Image 1 (cartoon, rainbow, N blue to C red):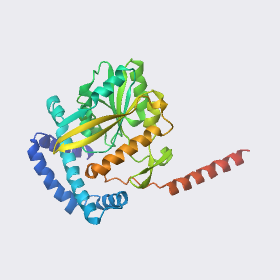
Image 2 (image 1 turned 180 degrees about the horizontal axis):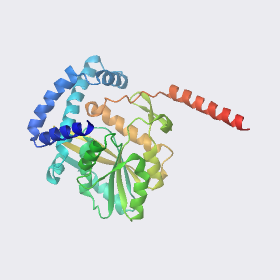
Image 3 (image 1 turned 90 degrees about the vertical axis):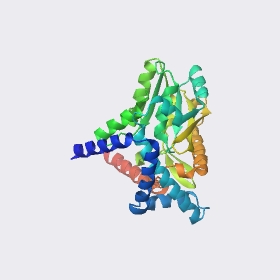
Image 4 (image 1 turned 120 degrees about the vertical axis):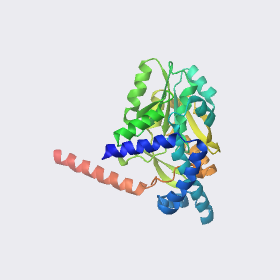
Amino acid sequence: MNALLYYITLFFLFIVNKLPFFLLYILSDLLYFVVYYVARYRRKVVRENLVNSFPSKSLKEIKSIEKKFYHRLCDFFMETVKLYGIGEKEARKRMEFVGMDKMQRSIDDGHSCVVYMGHMFNWEYMNSVSLYFDLEKVFVGEIYHPLRNIRFDELMRCVRGQFGAEPVPMKNTLRRIMQAEKEGKRFVVGFVADQLPKWEGIKHWVDFLNQDTPVFVGTEKIAQRSHAAVYYAWIERVKRGYYRVHAECLAEDASLLPEFGATELYYKRLEANINKYPELWLWTHKRWKRTREAFEEREKRRLDTLKRRAEKNE
């Protein structure tokens, strides 16, 4: 049954992929009506996230952002379908990169580059960044969470890797970076780092969008280990279907920053971009479902369990 669903979906995606962009955006507008008004896809989650993130905004302003977001979400889906086989010329036209000269200077100075990114539309077009580097000398990778369905995961790997960047499963990140270093290559690796960590992965909290937020710190640890330059890449929507990526250097050597320094710099920049372009961030996830109070309670129970075990073994 899963195989049948995969091939049906693949056929549908193939047909959509062949449509010109202007027809894709007509479909996107129709999809918006279905997603927002009929299916009401995650409307409750999105509204709660927006209200908590922008407490000073009126309900009218919140609804305006909400509707714009769903329009961008539908565009994102259509653009991602179109991405496979888009061609180098079209990719360069639709995703402009600013600041690649700075990143190249970091590499020339002997530093690899760790690139923080957020779920800002359309982050999937970021894989074309590999067009700006000599892949014989530089390993370009993007860290991702593999999909549960193996067939769909392989399809997304093909889409994301078509310009030479290598999709790297999160659990293999350090191993793949060490392999690149052994090959004598510098690396440029992108981390979409604004996701919710699992309970056991919570090591640090930041004030983000007016909320106490648990964050990943693994990106920072890898950057420090490799003495990598730390960059933040944020996306500007120029017009429908056209984007501009700005690469900003946060630090030339991550090891010189204080603990959690890179993480906090990243979240400050990301928050500034979301405040400026709130409709471009992915609001459909329950980003704040893990609270500090619940975390501390879990930690207390865990430590009590360890203490009882230690006492029992004495």
